[in-house]
Length: 323
Ligand SMILES: [Zn+2]
Image 1 (cartoon, rainbow, N blue to C red):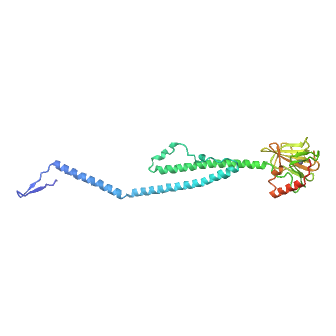
Image 2: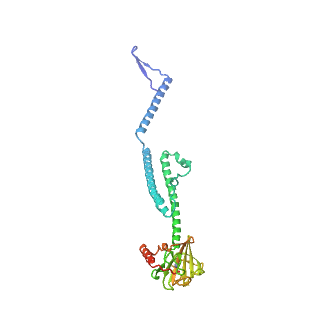
């Protein structure tokens, strides 16, 4: 029931009933309602800007924690990148040069990962800048790791090749040190014992008792095992690959056949005095690309620098050509 309101009239000293129209009533109600709504909005703004709800607090914490994790991740990736940089430096300056491989150009190692739109999917998040930056870092490290692993593959292959090559290149003396008397003649020009004329000696001569074991000086295939028509007597020639061949001449006995595969240190025959020879000895030659080279440089597996010097000194003093 609506309240009836009165107004005091000082002239008549009576109370008079106030007649209010419904229009006025409606206007008052509207004003009241509007003020209430405005105050509600004001309070809401005030509280939300000065106080947070538990849900907001949880989200805020979660957000801070995520930011922290992204930061940590970014630091870890930077650390991985630093380690990777050091490996790359060693790779370019040490590992690759050992195997005669060129360094990998920096722009290739550092090249970005293709596609401008690669990170489009990550644009929709509020902190997309951080996410994209971390994703970029990760992609870069991944690319660098890939390049590095390919480089190591290449080095591994080279190392395996080198290992095979080292097994094939002549690297020991063809006769055991305990067995041979001495080196009677070495590589170089000297007087031919048969003609007395100055002539090039293309190998080294080792004297020793007839029947002394003669060894293959590197892995290879026997390409000749027969009596030579050129004064070499019973002769074995081994092809080692990589351009190398070794020749063993004046043998007493041949223990291998043409086509045989031989390994370094395997007995291929015995010391003798066959062919154009003045006494029991082994004539040994090393050929690189079919040109004779000094065998002295191919004993690195079983002779020290000191022994080498001594051998040269003795040989120089007591040179006695035998073929
Ligand atoms: Zn000789």
